[in-house]
Length: 479
Image (tube, rainbow, N blue to C red; front, side, top):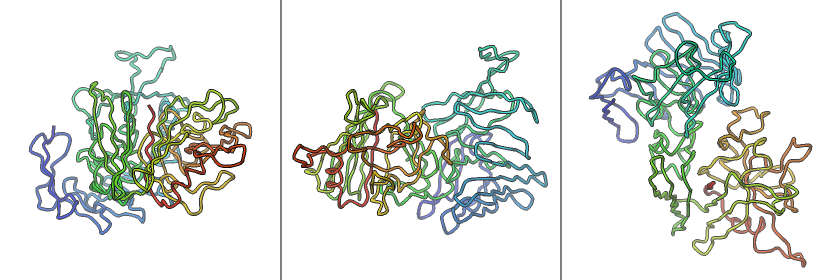
């Protein structure tokens, strides 16, 4: 489709792109200049000659507030203080289109377009109607929306084609996010612009960006338009801050524009970490890809002080009495590669699925930073081990967090590694309204002998092993 040539400055900024293939779709080679892209002092894209973007203004969060296409066309954005997008105003030579985002509800020129539901979205059956249609979506293993459908006539059967067809839209994507052309042009009804990664595809005025929350992404180039806000994390050091998911979109996703994660791997997962001299760790894992071939991968992390590996499964469960010690409990194996080298490797029992994962959510498989948080976790179950500095992490697919959360239900905030009650109780309490672990990672409490002496495993030993650690990496794997 495209045969692209990339030219960079002396660093990692893209300054020119050429396309020697098809110029009808995909990347549009709209200029032939020595410098086609310019950037501000923070590394944000400022102009794009290929799209006739003449200026981009940003706020203090490096989010665009205005994108200008010459003197008479522009897109303006309004956010709240945390960076959540509230409004988008498109000015096309005086024709104004305003999109408002009120939580899960999206309006265009004050008319409700849709609101989300767990399996898709709900929309008015026609403009201004008070009757609504439930639209269901099929997503692939990376969370991309591939098929949308609705049982419009209520007969319990989806009619795929012909008169009364109930397939709303079909999408097929190249790995970096461009849509296939020429055969999946089916669209029945309103164009729902949330597809790749279930994020908003912005095609107004030829912008062709995907809004992935913290940054904007150009699928035609396979690059971000802004610097990675977490570029200083150790596992990002070897990659350009403009790269998309380590240039490997078949294995990784970036759900919010801040960091890449393993999403799912097909087949049995096997993993091991090896401690190397100089605070360097090599992670080796193998998996069976979609073609049935076994793949072996190695990731090396440098500059980290410890690695924690949770090896569990979605079949993890608490035992009798909602206890980690109860009969029938199925726990995760936790291996800690400590700061003292090969002699400092210990294993623990743990739990990664939470008190009630269907209600409170569970952290998704992936690689995360952890750090020593001086303030620590509040409540009776104290801990100083924060995941992603208390920031946002993805929830395991199909295990949505508390519906009362104020942010996207597929994501969690304020995750810690901590222990349960001393008895091992880790379930929900207060009539199920609260849980010991509402998405956090648990280490079993320390067991005591009859003499009151701590045994050689459990929470106390875990903290002792990590007592001088300030930062490290967590790997969550479910077989």
